[in-house]
Every structure is written in C-alpha cells, then in structure tokens.
Image (cartoon, each protein chain N blue to C red):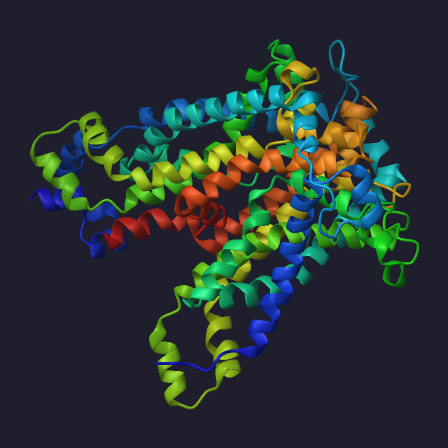
Length: 272
Length: 318
C-alpha cells in the first residue's frame, strides 16, 4: 500500500534535524579552524583556514593520558560486569528460591538509586579504603552502578532461551553449572554484547565518581579533563571543542559498528 | 514427566505453586541454580551501592569536614538545611526544571518516536542522526553548549536581534531556559527510542480496521497510537522525573548555579555544600532528600510497569 507523503511530519523532522545537526556541525567545523578565524567569522560559518592544531593541542594538554585512564576504567568496569552479571541473571531466571527473588527485587530497587545520592558516603568509603585518587576507586562504584540495569537486560535475554533446551539437558543429567556454560552463555550472546556496550558507555561517559574520587592529573579521565579544560581555557573554544570531539570518537565508532547492541542497551534503560 | 519437572503448564503457574507435588520440586531443585550464583554480584552491589545508601542516612545526623572522624550531632544538619533559604529555593528550582523537562520532552519525543517508527528509508537515516546526542556524555553535551552559547564568541553574540546582549547566562529566566533546552537536546532521543519501540509494537491490524472505518491519519494517531503508548508514557515520564531530580553536570558546567543562586538546584547544592564547603553532614541530608524522592518515584515504576510480576508471567508464558 503506497501512502501519500506526510508533509507536516516531514517539516517537523527537518526542524529537529537542524536542531541536532547544526550544533554537531559547528562542533566539527570549529575544531578545524584557528581561534582567530572562529572569533572573526562566527561559529556557523565555514572554516576559513584549515588546521589540526586543536587536536594536537588537546593531546599536548594531557588528553593522551586521560584517554589511557578512561580506557583502563572502561575495560575494568566491563570486566567486573561480565564476571558478576551472567551468574546473577542465570540465578534470577532459573532459580525458584525465595532468596533469589528477593535479590532480584533488591536490584530492581537499585535501578533507581541515583549516583548523586551516594557520593558523600562513597567519598568516605573510598578514602577509608585508601583508594582515593586511584583508578580502582573509580572502577568499583562505577561497576556497581552498572549492575542493576545489566542484570535486567541479561535476565531478559536469558528468558528467551527455550525451556525445552533446559529440559533436554535435565534429561541428560546436566548440572546447573554445565547448563550455564554450555547452554545459557552461548545462547545469550546478544544480551551479553548489549550489557558490554551499556556498561562501557556508562564507564566512558561517567563524570560524578571521577569528579569526587580523584584529583591528580595522573588519574584524570576524559570527562574530567573536558571539565578542567573548560574552566581553565574557556575562551579557547576551538581547542575545547577539539577535546570534546576526541572524547566522542570512540563512542561514535561503536555506534557505527555495533549499533544494534548499543540501541538495545539504551532501550534497556527504558525498562522495556 | 520431565515436562512437569522443569516448566509447569501456564494454568498451574497462574493458579499457584501448590499443585506441584513436593517430589517434583525436590527433583527440579537439582537442575536449577541456587542463590549462591547470585551471591557475588549481590555482595558487590551491597558494598558499593546499598551500604553507601544506608551511610548517607547516618551521615546526615553527623558532622564531618572530610578529615578525621564524623561526629554525631543529632538533627543539627536537618535544622540548618531546612532554615536555609538557598535550600528551599533549590527545591523549587529542581521541581520547576523537572516539570519543564516533562512538559517539553514528552510531546516532542512521542511525535518523533511515532515518526521514527515508520519503516521508510529516509526516516531510518534521519533517526540515525537524531540519536547522536545520546552518545555524548552529559559533560561533553554541556561543554559543547557552553561553547556554542558563549556570551562573547557563541551563536547568541551573533544574533543580538534575538538574544539582546547575547548573554543568556546573566539572567535567571534565560539561564533556566538554557538548562531546560540542553536537557531536552540531550534526552529527547532517549525517550524517542522508547516511543519508537512501543509504536512499532502496536498491532497493525488496529490501523487496518481504523482505515476501513475511514479514520484519517490524525484520528488514528489520537485514537489508536496514543492509547497504545500509555504504558510507555508512564515509564518515560518517571525516568524523566528521576533524571530531572538528579540533574547535576548541566548545572555545574553551564551555569555553576548562577547568576547568584538562581539556578542552584538541589543536587548541585548538595555537591557545593559537601565538596566545596566541606559540610558533608548537610550534604548528606540533602542527598537523603534526593534518595527519598527518587525511591518514591521508583516504587511507582516497579508498581506501574509490573516488573515485580514479570517473573511469574514469563514462566507462565513459556
């Protein structure tokens, strides 16, 4: 059935495209021009004199180090999540015990604990543990706050495994452990990649825990680097936007190559 | 026999577990994981999320400046923050910004979501662009908009016919407007995703029936699509409210709570009290208010969305 085009929707979608696209264009265009050019001809115009100084400048002001720190935090957070969540989701989906359903309820309530609400005691805990200004002190709370959503996403994926497969393995006398490794893990790969992308995004974009739990340059992550760059060189807008662009590139790459997992991870946040 | 062991038929699951014989459940027990599988994650979560949550309540009755040991001071912190005009103002500002977010973003994301749910190719391409803001960290978004709206070198400085002196951060009304706008820019794509998924799940037969009855596009939208999106509206609104209550980065980077304290919302005030004023007791008291507000909303989420019932439903459907 061919439908006539929807002109109102078309017009609205173009307005929104400008609202989203223009800032992104200004960002990219500004990073390729000098400060003088930006100040002279304004943000929306096309770059007059082409330069890559804004990117090299970002690296000169320490962003290489911040990148490395962020990668360490992201990899470790994903590692912790991958270690803890699959057994948890397996128990949530397959165990019939009352303890497990209480645990599930705990994680559901945990979905709504805002990180903002716990930063004061977190600062106390991490300082007492001697982890202040240490990347491990950022990794642990960040991973903990990824758990509820990851558990929800992965248990959803595991519920889709056909019960007949479990029955067949039960008939073979398989232990819960064998079912986990031979059936559950291989068949929930989609869910696993979703929680990897989800927790990596959380770690990469995390700001609050690094802000209050680290202070020196050697433990700085990218988001914190951006914030500092803004407070220190707020007038160097092309340089600032170069740093912003660099921080986004890895996520954009994931968006290009693993869009399905990413969108599903984001949808998971909607609780659907 | 094995069928009975591992998956009870739907009727049995629905009417209760009493019909399963004890022998069956004991046999089934051997093939099902115990709660020990959930233990490592639970302990980890308890230490790094639940324990701090309990500690925030305790710390709100203590005085601590970041060094040495916290000292019990009774309700002193609470009296101070309740007498603090900036705190009272911050609560109103938080509510105002949250309400603005819900009012602006809900209709916008419903329309965009329903639009993006169509399977036309141009829609797919455009939605791929629309979702980009979602990939940027709140920090990157705030830094980007701070630069774009810079009073001297930004867009408003070039459009003085629209923005006056070009300084949107100098007055309360425009500063709040900037915060509401940037949140909308950042979070609308997320809610659009929710509505896109929900709109795609509407059974096509409903539209076919409506088309046969001669209902036009707009009547279909208001009489079929919107009612079918009801649950998503509730979920999305609750997420907007929780997100609104805990807005922090946007304020820290865009306005620093200013001009004066005119955009100091509660989460930002808590950060200032605790980490700039080293009054961790008062900071904890404000944090506890946020927790209570967010928990009330989250209990509504669990109730409304039926998460807690999902388990038995899913077992029954199998």
